[in-house]
Structures are given as structure tokens and as C-alpha cells.
Image: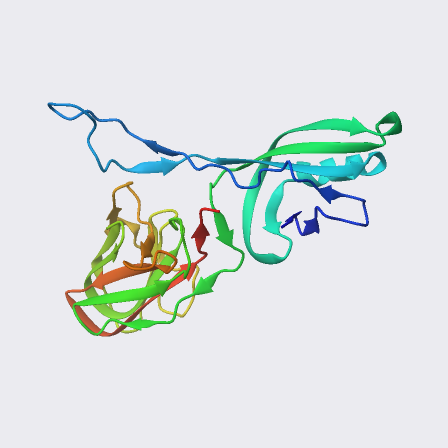
Amino acid sequence: MTYSVAGIPLNNPTFGWVFRAPSKPISELVRERTNVRTPSGDGMVAGMPATISPVTLSLVVRTPRQHLQTLVALFAAEGALTLTADTSRSATFELLSWTTEGSGPSESWLDVKFLIRLPQAFWRDALVTTSAATALDSASVSVAGLFPGMSAPVQDAFVRVKGAASGLQVSDLASMAWFTYDGALTSTQYLRFDSATGRAYVTSTNTWSGGTEVSGDIDFGGPRGVFEITPRLSPTNPSTRDGRLVVTTATRSAATVEVRGRGAYLI
């Protein structure tokens, strides 16, 4: 298995590059938890929310000396790391350092070790997808099948509700993160909630941008203080994972909900 940076393969006959076995492209994931002691007795309070630290990877590439600057320039420009054979997922990285170890006459060959960091911790789908519209035809509706195969939380999805509805609340089934909208939508309006910013907009056209801001009518929260869509594992098969929302309304008429974003993955 080999990797590409900005679409350029690290196994590259043109430049004589060889992706080397000492690489460690899969790093351990560290969950940082707040330690709260129990009021009495031993141990800590269980179930405290956790955040995942940025992931650090090391990639080793052998290069002829004449192509060293090209290789370093490629990593220094940073950008996206992908699997060469599968570009459906990518990870944004930052370059932390590089070191070299030479071999051959006058160090004509160099093994270059790049230490990179994934600031967002997770791999993401390369393409943005939009779920099929789900009808809000009862007081509580489940929306399943979001970001199939996801294994990490998505905190930057858009949730859009169209049609007449009031008393709206959207909850993530796995984490119970939520957001509410205190206003009432008419039959021709769209409410768009941006979970990355916590802001919301109402439009009268089928668009995913612009509109009248209604963030003052929005409230949101969850175990980690944000609205996020988290993986729900099948009870009998943990390889089956997706995001699931529960949408509740006080009143509704010909209303639907859609979700737009990119899946997130631990590895």
C-alpha cells in the first residue's frame, strides 16, 4: 500500500522515489478525557466527554539526490494525503519536520523521513454528498444511512429542513448531540443549519448558501458542547456503521430533511 501527496504518488518512477517500509502511516489515536474524581470512593467519574488529539504520521521515501528538492517541496506545500490506489478519502496534513539518511557514493541516494500531522485527526471523504430527502411525516422521524462506513464524528455537516414545520429538534442517535429551532417554517422555506459554526439561515430557494440568518433562534449542544453526527454501530456487526438522526417537530406539513457533508474515518 502506498500513498500520494497532492495527487503525486510517493512510489514514483519519474523521480525514482520509493515509498519505504519504515513508514508508519497509521498512528495511535489518543483520547483526551477530563479527570473528575468521584465525590467519595476510588476512581474517576465515568463517561466524561473526550477529544482526539491531532494524529502524527511518519512517511519515509527513498529518492535520488537530484530529486531531493522536488520531494521536500512537495511535502512542504502540504495539502492532502491520499491512498494512491483509492482517492475516495483524503487527509489534510501539516509538515512538522524531515530528516535524511544517505547511502551510496556521495550520498547519491537518500531516505527522507517526513513527520506530518493531521490537524483534524481524521480522514475524510474526498467528495461532498447529500442524503436523499426524508419526509417528516410524523412527530418523530429517524434518518438513517448517513455517511455509510463512518468511524469518526462529523462536526461540519449541513442539515437542511424544507417545508412547513415548527418546534424543530434534530438529535444524533449515537451521541445525543442536538440542535433546536425556535422559529416556524412556511411551506416555501428552507432552514439550513451549519454544524461547523452553529449558525443557521432561511432561504426561499433550493440553495445551500446565503439566506437570512436566524442563528438567534438556534440552540445546540451535546456531550462535547457541539452538534455532531457520530457513528452508530450495528449491535451485531461493528463493521456496519452509519450516522443516524432523529428529527422531532411539533407541527409539520410536507416537510423534509436532508444532510450534506463528508464522512469521517479514524484511519
